[in-house]
Every structure is written in structure tokens, then in C-alpha cells.
Length: 221
Image (tube, rainbow, N blue to C red; front, side):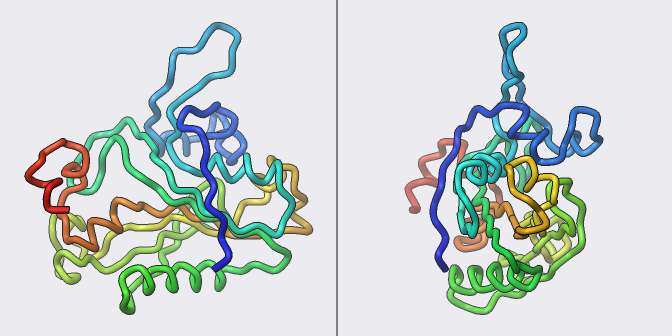
């Protein structure tokens, strides 16, 4: 679909990870990302382990002119309690498309096409309104749980759905932070959980199995 694969640093600055994405220091949305902060020298910019791959959006837009189509696969880190569907480290695949005439329909259509191709069959999805400071409007894309077939289990929190992909239309503030004029450009962005795609593909019911070093699990693949 014409997307270029881009990478970015695991250790990020506070500006790229939060401020440039419309999450200033006093914004309550910062509580959504439990952050591993690094020790910094006095007077230096605060550094952290990136909590999402979204900082690469701004880094790329700063250096490249639209139209843009990129995906950014990479590891991210969250200081949070682990369970069957959450861990302190996991992989995201960030997506960004910017052009003069991009809509929510483009966002939904590309995600649906990707999922259908990835799983080699039509996937049942739902688009659920949600809030993220770097997109407006924002959505969650959920896919029907493959483990239980939508009946409800521990992997999907007994809802029948697995949260897969937050995203939406890029907030004008983010475009401005990257040096683009939101009157001329618009686009969508998303951050897809790659680990969850693998869990659904192989019917793995606990994300922690990927990282606990159990050879009995790993040797299956």
C-alpha cells in the first residue's frame, strides 16, 4: 500500500514522547502512559524509555515533506502491572499517512484491508470512539477475540473483543509541532499492538509467554 518502514530510538526525549504530541507536563493524559524515566544530568532535557512509537511521527515529519506514508515497528515500554494482555515491554507498529485529502474512511479502510490480508480472511472489527491527545477525532479499533470466538475469556477481559489499535486523525497541534501547516495537510495515525496480532494468529492466551524465556513455549515456533 505504499508505506515506507521507518525506525526510531528506544531512548526518547520528553519533547518527542509527550510535548510534541499534545501531552504537556500538566496534562492529565500523561497518567495514561506509566513511564520509565531515566536519570538525567542536571540542566539536561529529561529522557525516558519511549512509551509508544508515536515520537517517530514528529521526527519523520520534521525532515520530510508530505505526502507521507510510513509504518514504524518497534519496542515500547510501560511501567505498569502485567497480566494476560499487558506487559512492561511490547511491540507496536505505528502508522502515519499525511496528504491534502485524508479522511476517517481512509483510516478505517486501510486498517480493515491490512487485517484481512494478515489473517487471510475477513476479520470482524469495530470502530469505537475514544480519546487520545494526539488525534482528533480518536478511535479504538477492536477485533473479535480469536481465542474464544467472541464468547469472552481472560485474554479479552471476558468482553469478546480485543483492543488492538488506537488511532484517528492527526491533531493539528502535532502537525504544527513537526513544522506542517494543518490548513494545508491532514492525515491519520495509529499504533497497532503487534504482540496482540501474534497472540490472535497462534491463539496464545498470555502476552507474558513471549518474554519469560520458557524454551517449551519458544520451541513450538
